Length: 501
Ligand code: HEC
Image (tube, rainbow, N blue to C red):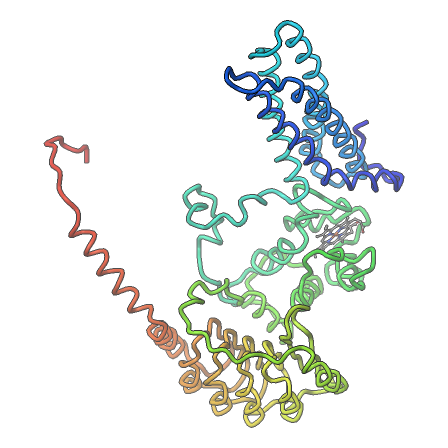
């Protein structure tokens, strides 16, 4: 009955099995209701509801049996952590069989006495409830992966429980140069989008991606990762399939890696699927480098978001720009993407390759300027002059200008963008003076100036000045003042007992 890894499990078994996650909540609820009713029934002053208990118990047995059978069907094709699955199946089966045993115990107890506490029955019921907690937790881990419940636990509590990982605790984004190829770049991509199904709890297609060694071992089809040959690698092949293709990875409806992440994975395999090495030490093509910067540089959502006054320039409604966008889409060098179905915000890209994006293309975006939140025109032919158009994009949050010919002068046009939080100037000719134009940007959170004329000391002064501008200095002074108040409020209580120092 407990077989798994059954290659050709009939389709109907899976069809029914998929109802397990929905149905299993019935026995859990019924058992809980039963416990409450039994408690009331056996307490001295409670209502006499023995008959109701009996009815609920009978239904509990039925739904528990159905849930268990469906669970067994669901597990037939395998692909779960075997130890955990085994435990879940055994304990789940017990929890459902126990319901029938409880029926026996109960009728036996009630044949002796119409109500009141019965040691065998009530303790068996309590034990079953405890068992349910374990079964439920294991089942949750099988579907959602371990750590699901605690994933969004606030950091201070995690710290208190000693749960923070080394990298989280280290705080702050690492610089691109010092990042390790596998640990900092590749692994996080797998973790974000694949490990849920290819990790310790579930290993679909017999593939695990939670460590370098396991990833290299590959899945049941083989050739998961062929070092030096992305085209022959099953992993890359799957990432490029249409989203509704049955073999597409991750499957439709699951969080997808973005284009940058896919480009990084491809490069990594091309470069021989390197196990470790600092990015700063490796030969990396420009396009991939900027993808890496995007991947590593994205800071966690700003904590102090609220501290910045909101300057609202409303976006045009989708209906108002829809036809403009259709016209712009005709241009070979403009790519427009709606960010989400429930928002009129758009992302604009100037594609690489022959159809270069230039100042003229940038100027054409004027009719939809208020709705642009991301503008990716790195590697394009945009110049300082063209950036005038960007000054009119009040909702712009991310701007990619890497490897363009822009200089300090061009940045004067960016000085008043109220929402800009990400600016990539990698490989441009900007100098220390450029920073002068950026101090006033209220929301700027990350700035990439790799391979520019900007000196380290100027960058550090800039960081300091931004801190001052945000008012962090003032907050620090307030904290110090409050600390002094706390100290002043302390009282001394001398017990005369010496402390063991
Ligand atoms: C929601 C679950 C899910 C997620 C998320 C997921 N996969 Fe899969 N994957 C599967 C299933 C199920 C199979 C087996 C069926 C098949 O081969 O299509 C599979 C199979 C594969 C295979 C073929 C393994 C073999 O040799 O048979 C590869 C390669 C793969 N996945 C890569 C990935 C990558 C890379 C990611 C992340 C970017 C990912 N998957 C995310 C469910 C998932």
